[in-house]
Length: 69
Image (cartoon, rainbow, N blue to C red):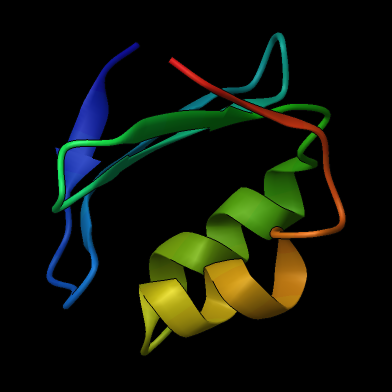
């Protein structure tokens, strides 16, 4: 999955596959996580948020299935 670099204190890059609704987050510590069944509007909100990490914590973590890859 292609990820776009972002400016964040915790996140290095963010990718999204609309067909499978999979969100992929690469953290600055090297960890890569995939979150599943993410609607397009959540991804759009994440990418346009002032704080990517804060948006992820408030709208994705704990709300969607995920897997570390």
